[in-house]
Image: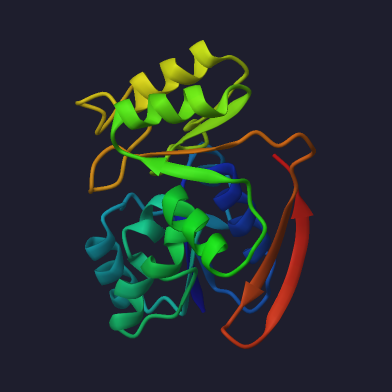
Length: 220
């Protein structure tokens, strides 16, 4: 059997490394992979990132399972595309991936379902965002709504820092900025939420819609 891991980071390297230990597998391919996966004789890098091209390659190679790591292809709908063509794929659908790809969506989801979360408001108008910050005071947290490779959050300890974050994230041409923040198709949007003091931790589970299997906890 051949499996495919989508991604180019250390996370995908770890997944591919572990999958390659299974005696059931004939080959583990990584698309596009990285320098580390290229050095592992048990892994094969596939230089494809386009979803359609990768799906056609997976069909031609009779890939039995695809594991998707990065947020970007998940947000772009790779799971939906692969499943629509009969491919087995592990990862959330495009709709479910919004919990990661849109902070505004995830905050609204938590509020709607009674999941505890910091008080917040969402803004696309910088004037309204600045007024809200003046009303709330500092410290306060400003988050770019879209995917930002972990760089889209400013924990502002002063009003000046918070206002500067708004100016940066809601600039007229803020479709893309030097931090790597890519806003959603609807345009620049930020989530401003209360500052909470404490320790961050992640509890990760796998779910098929009925069953839940806990994995290891982690912390950034």
